[in-house]
Image (tube, rainbow, N blue to C red):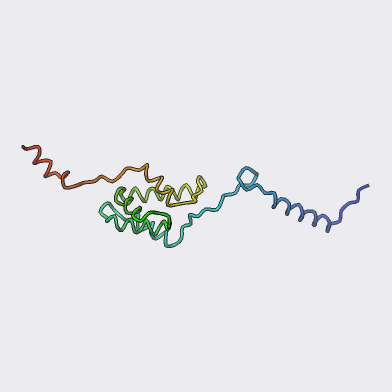
Length: 149
């Protein structure tokens, strides 16, 4: 016949059971508990300031300033030298800030885990409309002169 365990033995068995559960825990999200993997995309105070400044930029903001803010936001040593300047020249600041908002929303909602924020931003911005390039040849005066001849 089995003896009834004392309170001390029950506590020890419970602790052993909890330790075994911790070792065999499911961490991929398929178990009863969900687990969100850690990400490298953390919003520090400096990055939040850069986001606020990007939101205040207009289409008249020089691309150099926008590129500087993007460099502050995405501190990635693997990016090419003029990558952020090229993005700032091709996309207006409003589209850039909307893409950053989209990234933050996806990250906070748990839809995506952002391991490389700079690469993910570059991937997302490719789906946005590019900046309209207005050159000297496209001005109103040039078009009027060409049509009058």
